[in-house]
Image (tube, rainbow, N blue to C red):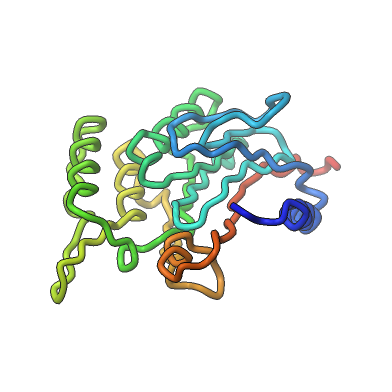
Length: 227
């Protein structure tokens, strides 16, 4: 997105250094707003995917966002984690459900999972049109049988419609069978909290250059007593 590659590499190296000695590598994918989940440990180029699962100690499963929702999963008992990039396209396509499926296939237990919904654009700043609304409602009903009309609201003093992306993500997670008590929503808006987060939509509204990205990651710590 126009960032200096040297700065990006420096920032990522600094992150690993800050997490030392527990973290040794970042597992990042080429995010494509889809529903594919990658299991860390691939050789060669990064796969096209929007979630990473790993049970390898020291490997940080990570995603990049700048208004989309980062969702982190962890089963502390079975020592497996995942990071998912859930913009509206990926969320509608099923990236959250697919991430959960891969976690369970690799040994996670649904009842033991803990999930974090990270910083993303909040409904106050996520203006959409009626075509978008109908697309989301129809696709969600067709795919998982969930009514999501409640995630769209109209401002009383204008004709603007807003979409509650983090609320939609939360509802889809609960639809999978997760208990609401297993999920923690930070409720931090990337658009509003300018001092803390990049926001693609904020940059567009201000006619600014493309913005940077937040990195959200999670890792399995090495067993106690090991290096």
